[in-house]
Length: 158
Image (cartoon, rainbow, N blue to C red; front, side):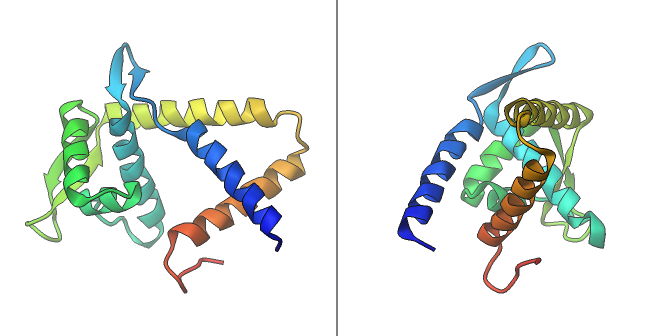
């Protein structure tokens, strides 16, 4: 690898980060929902999907903090906002009564679905001129890279 390639990759990733940052507020079903509420809902949904193969594990504030890369206290405040907005619900953990388990409400599930549909439509429009094989290769490489960057050493899937 050359330094130029790594600098080019770094620059591209910085541009993409700005493109995908959550906005301050999102219009959803006739009201404005805080952008951080969407991030909490996405974290809950993604954790549930990732764990569904080995039996669904409970999602708590710790898992949200880890997914969002924030302190536990910050995640706790963000989860409270999501609950107050009616997008998530807290329940007592079955595994550990000292912990809270988070679930998306029906409204939170619709918010996640609408956000995903918006993002995939945006990708579809941007990548329409690309050959299908290039899109597939991009998806594979980005998935591998994301796994590498988000998992600890020695825990890679592939």
